[in-house]
Structures are given as C-alpha cells and as structure tokens.
Image 1 (cartoon, helix red, strand yellow):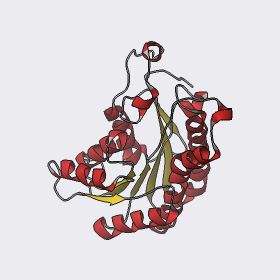
Image 2 (cartoon, rainbow, N blue to C red):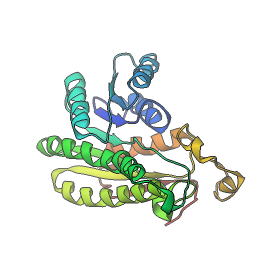
Image 3 (cartoon, rainbow, N blue to C red):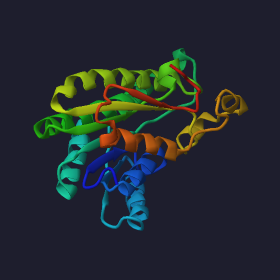
Length: 248
C-alpha cells in the first residue's frame, strides 16, 4: 500500500499498459482517474476496477493532443478525488514501419500530438499544482524504440519517444527544486492490443536476452516503484523494462 491516499491520473488507461498501471496503483492504495480517448472503454475499465476497489476510480474521455481536454481531465480528477499527486502520461499511438518519404504531414502531426504533446500538455497543467504543494510524481511512457531508433514501428513513433526521453530530463531539472520527481519507463517488446499492429516475428523474441516478451504487469510494477516514496531520490531517469533487449 505504498500509494495510500494518493490520487493519480493515468492517460491511455482503458486497456493495455495504462489499465495495468491503474489497477496496480489501486492495489497500492491510490485513487485513479482513468483517462482515455475512448470514453466508453474508460467507463468499462472503471466497472472492472470497481469489482476490486469500489468507488476509487473514475473515467474521463480526453484527447491528450488537446490542451483544453487535458485541462478538463485534471480538473475532473481534482473535483472527484482532490489534489492530484501522480501524473502518468501513457497514452500513445504506433504505426507499422514505412519509408520516411511516404509518411504524410498529417501523420507526423497526429503522432507528435499524442505521443509528445500528450506528455507536455498534462505536465504544463500539473506542474503549477505540484509546485504549490511541494510534491508530485510525473511518469512518462517512453520506449526502447526511442533509444535505438526504432524496432518494428514507424519512424514517427521512435522519434516522438526519443523526444519523451529528452523531455524527462529537461522537466526533471526544472521541477526538482520544488520536490517533484520526473521519470520515464522504456518498455521493450510488450504484447498489447496497440503493439499487435507491429506483428512481431520470431526474430524479435530471439533478440531478447531473457527470451520472452514482457507483460503489462512488468511495466505496472515499474510505475508503482517510481510513483512511490521508494523512488524519492530518483529523478530524470529512464527505467528500461525490456528483458535485456537494450542495455546502457
């Protein structure tokens, strides 16, 4: 129960890694706002979570590439649960690899909007709140793709995730004097509905030293650590959870 009486906002939490993080946070004692572009799926996620932790989660439909939507998301969380302690920017989109010359401007705009601005906008709203309280946790979802220049995904994904890695360090430096930690998680090959579009072949699994794909619970465990007091002296870091696929 490391997150007892804490309030968390998790974007992209209706399914996959985001849902696993929300579920783990609830088990650690937190209250969680389930934010997702698909409002109906977010409501369904809350219904599932209510079976285990009644009344400690709520749903909000949000487009994280829209700052007004992100403002509404944070306001909804505060209205329902009180001051937000933890922000997890997990929402993301990924596409199959394509030659750079074939990627349309609108595709770049869409992926940057969700994967990068979807971290920046919530941070801009959360930072003043956390500064005033002298405490806070921000966790960004990066990727091994941003560290190695891509694995199976379109270049838009790896470029935006590399941006998240830099954002983590830059924001951590700014917010550290205010008692706020900022860290990233870089998953490797994790089977989710989103990554199924990448159609991993046998060569990907063979390239993982531990010999298996990751589970969403592996990422949720990392998030619970970074959100807790156990990581109070960790900021500006990227926690690689990839089975050894990429080693620093």
